[in-house]
Length: 375
Image (cartoon, rainbow, N blue to C red; front, side, top):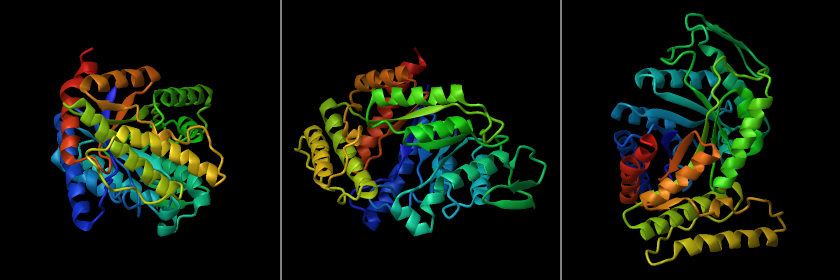
């Protein structure tokens, strides 16, 4: 099993000065993750989502991290692949360049970037995002099958006459491919395409187990006709929100507060909720507060006459790897049993202070990861 970290560059107080500090803090965390034995550092791509994610140029962030590290893999989790975000030829060129300069350490994930804020900002047609992501994956999957040949592509949406696609990546025919999977339909797509799945896990272990079953069933049923490459990557990575400190109660409170900020940010951009609450009260019972936020969310849906679907409060579920190293080990054991091939540690949430992030990374590196590597 692999252990990784994923970065949103999320922040309360999105002032210019604090924004710059958070971005530098993320680099410091990534460098420490390399020293502590984590396998991969992943970075999202979002545009214009104040508070929620200031990681608008992950290719620059990941290149900076690669230059400061020796061993850890560098993961795009993900590149927004609709053409007006990133033309597939440019996405392929940047990925290959980073793969070469990092010594073959790149993982390349694809996603839609489908919030109304992002699509309107970049002129993306929301109705074409799935089709454009698939076309981009097919182009990248084909690009370097013969690294000495010119690249040519004739698809439904794009045509490229023979050109040299340069540089060529160190990992041939391309870095491992993944896709962000927020629901069962996209999991089935990832399986059909023959690429890895990056899944959320806020609802808890039971949801992860169900998503793993969906992925495995789709893998068993596929014919191979929709593979985007000659290389198949059936890898299932699951999100694990975590804060681990010497003070178990403090870790639980900091984790719950960070997750409540994360959940409010998601609601703001995906569900037209209010802006996230930036205040941090060191005396508040944040575990109780996030449970109340879940109840308030359900009440809002009822009041707005919006159907309350199963999982409507999943982002408010606080039963994660918050607490002591032993708590984290116990939770990861459950994720392992649920079928996770990789644990995506979500540590950097908007209200979590830098010292808590760094202490969490150290505890994982010194106690949690060795527990599984040595067993």
